Image 1 (cartoon, rainbow, N blue to C red):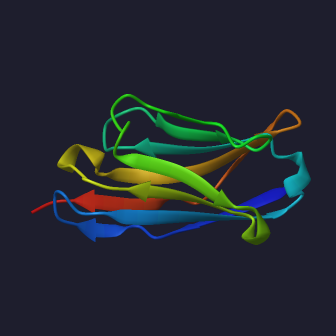
Image 2 (image 1 turned 135 degrees about the horizontal axis):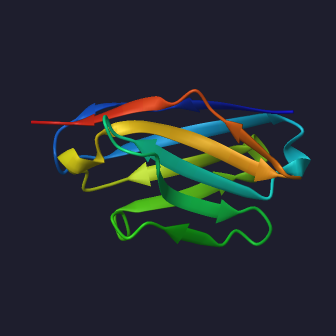
Length: 116
């Protein structure tokens, strides 16, 4: 099993920044890909960013390219999502996801609200 705990959400004005953290524990050796998803009210869950654990390559949704950055601290078993130039459309619950050995693991989600 893999456990994921997110933190770092909150409220921010448009143009502001937030950094989300996702701390992984348990059988982390199984993890192949780490992803950040988000889900806004009334909308489907959307893949925002991904990071492949072997090599560290990253990928982003077009809507966040150039504004969001996914990174990791291997020593802390933690993945981050740095979000800059936030827009009201970024308002959502953000979820950390880990995939490996045919299994999906999810964090509890953290709310991000962008509003003036």
